[in-house]
Image 1: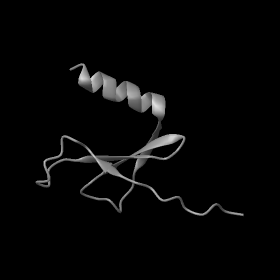
Image 2 (image 1 turned 180 degrees about the vertical axis):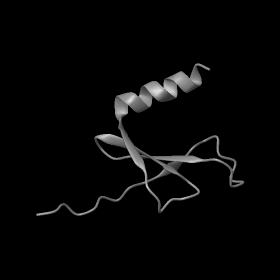
Image 3 (image 1 turned 180 degrees about the horizontal axis):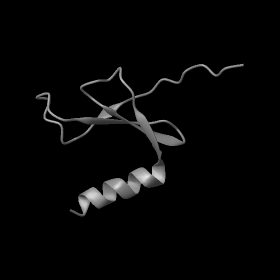
Image 4 (image 1 turned 120 degrees about the vertical axis):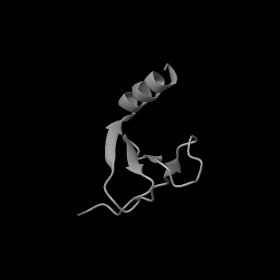
Amino acid sequence: MSQPPIAVQWRRSSYSNGAGGECVEVADLHSMVGIRDSKWPSGSHIAVRHGSWARFVTSLRAQ
């Protein structure tokens, strides 16, 4: 029996200015973090583990 789809809440990057530039959206997918291009919300997305996402964000903040 297949699982019903979960409601996903995508959040746009706080660096987005709303002018249609390069924006990333993320979503908590319970065991993973979903990442997608905000200009193409119906397109594909990738999913990474929470720890990988946290290390990625930490490395960006350190720059």
